[in-house]
Structure formats: C-alpha cells, structure tokens
Length: 486
Figure 1 (cartoon, rainbow, N blue to C red):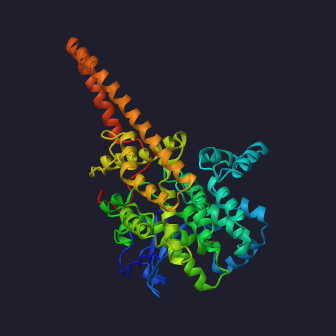
Figure 2 (figure 1 turned 60 degrees about the horizontal axis):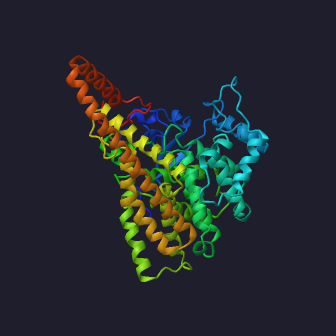
Figure 3 (figure 1 turned 90 degrees about the vertical axis):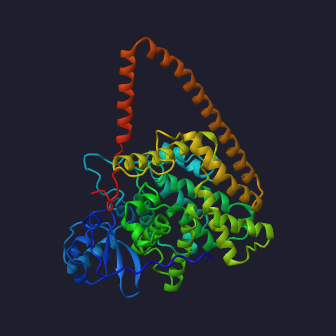
C-alpha cells in the first residue's frame, strides 16, 4: 500500500504573510494565541479556512471554519446558536447552507422544474454508460452535478446505510466540496470532479473490480474521485514552486497540489463530522487511505506507477484478495479516471481538450504579465490545442490505458482505446487543415505587402497590437500571492 507523505514540521517563529491571511485558506501556527503574532486570532475564526499547525502532534491539519451569522459573538453565545442550528430541519438546513449564502435577495435561486429534474433522473439511470454527457447533466442539475452524482452513487451502492452516514452531514460535506472547487477555472472545477467520479464508477463496475472491491474500497474510491482536485488554483506545481508560493514551501515542493487537495478533503470531513461516529482509529485510517489515492494522481509520478503496474502484469502476481493490491488498483483506476478525457467520444473529448488548454494558456498569460519564464505548453502563441493533445495522448494517455486494457480486457477498455485512436486522428486532421490554411494565406499576404507598403505597415501594426493584447492577458486570474513579483 502507498505510504502517504509525512507532512513537514514548520518552525513556530515563522512570520505569517498578510496576503496569506486574506486568502480562502490561511496558515496559522499552534493553537496558542500568543504564537499568532500580529494577526488577531479572531480574524482567523471568521475565515472560511485555515491550515493550523498543532504542536501537540506536529502535523499540519487543514481546519475549515464556517462563517457564522453574527461573527464576533462570544463563545458563551455560540452554544445556544449551535443548539438552534441542530434543530433545523433538513430542508431549512439546506437553505441555510453555504451553497445559498451570498446570493442577493433580489435574485432568487432558480430551482429546477419537474422537466429538468426528470431528465436528470433519466440520465442517472444510465450513469454507467461511457458516453455519459457530464456537461448536459451539469446543466440539468443547475450546476450541481458533483453533489447530485456523488450522492446518487453513494446511495446506489447502499453506502449511506452501511456506514450509517448522517444524511445532513453527508449533504453538507458534498455541498462544501463542490463549492471549494473554483468555478472560474476552465478545467479544474467541479464539473471535472464529477466527470472523474463518473469514470471511476465505470471502472469499479468492471468484472475484475466489481467482484473484489469491498464496500470500504468503493466508498474511498468515490470520495477520492470527488475530492481529488479540491481547491485547485488553476496553475500547476512548477508555477507554485517558481513563485515561492506558501503551499510549495509547506509541502517541500513535493506533490504540492495533491497534498493540498488531500488535506482540504480531510478538513471538510472533520468539519462536517461525516466520520465522527466511527472509532477514531478507523476514521484516521480512512483519511490516510484517501490521501494515498489522491497523491497517486500526481502526474509527475506517472512513470513510477506505470512501471509498477507493468511489472505486476508481466509477473501476473496481482491478487485482489489482498487489501494492498486492491488499493493499488484503485490508485491506477483513479489515475485513469483523472486523464480519461482523450478516451471519451469526440464531442465530449474535444470540449475537455479546449478547456484544459485554455487553462494552460491562462497560466502562460500570467507568467508573461509578470515577466516569468513561460511554462511548457502554456504559450498560446507557440502551441495549439491539437499539438498539445496529440503529444499528451502519445506519451501519457496511450501507455497508461494500454496497460489498463491488459489488466481489464473488456469492452469498455477497447472502447476507450478506440475513441482515443479516433480522437488523435481527428486532432491530426485539424492540424493539417490549419497548416494548409496558413500556407495559403502566406502568398496572399506577401503579394499585398509588395503592392502596398502602407497597407503592409498597417497590417503589421494590427498584428503587433493583437499580440500585445493576448500576451497581456485578459484573464481574471492574478498571480498567486507569495511570488517574487512585488
């Protein structure tokens, strides 16, 4: 079984940057108010979340704090407030959740009518189909695809009853998970998490896994898929490292994003108390195994996992009656689900390809704006969606899914490989068309330049202006705090 990374021990005298305290999540040190330094501890208690350094066990714990109505009240007044809060009915609790908080009163939340609800239910009946359209499902659920899908799958497996999960706590957990995905990310958002969760469900239904996985394995697999990119900032690990981001420092430049996703998920589990009815040892073990699954999605460790998978298949020594082998297969399944977009039908795969490439390009725009070295694949002037996708399929997706097909040689595996081959050919065809159009346009431009120098100068100026606008970037994203840029 994968051993989770040990979190670093942070010095207690390290100053807390002001920009950190103004973010969605913040780092604070120790539970003693004397160690907070300049920041007022009461400010932290009013924030959405904080990473708290607890000196008792020297572990960085991700503590999520809900903002309560009437922040700043004394601890004496918070007890009756909690009692009243527990008395709320399920329906009233949902309306007081953070999903609805912040919506102006003059703009009512659009509740789905029966037609939309009915269509969403019909889609859920076919949730195991590989051509499941998560974009359509997200529209039918009014942007709540992750909540609706995960809740449905947990119910379908009977996990709510089996693990005696409190319905209100579970719903609150799923609402907070969905909200903590950044909706302004083109790719790493809640819809991507829902898509990965649906893919994970498809893999867990494969005969090799369906007859071997325990209920605990299934619960962990679904929760890991739903939370695997939680609170993703929309930039990659090299960006966080070269800008001296505090997360890179916290996790010592190792699986920075994956560690953050895991600790964010653990924070939500603890805040909602979803596993609070379990023995402490069982709850901690669930958190560790959840982390092991999420950490496996680190793309920089792709070859490590792929080599290990290939060795197991070559030696034919995978035994799914072993808990450690089942866990490893769950890791591989989650890795496949995370990058399965090239294996979807073209109309779905193309949308995902455009979204992930746009997120790359937005990062490149930020890097140009702040005069940083542009990361590979992030320069919109030097790359296209097609060449990025063809390279990704060739060097990352095809080797992984070829080995998965060796492990589980089913109709689904062959369908995924077939879609990937067709999608790769489609991107190649689009690349050739774009090249032909460019080559045809060059002689026309050259002829215009020769006949009319003034027009040529004007065209050049327009091109320069367009390039400058693109390089400057119109994205709403800003460089994360903690960079070298002042």
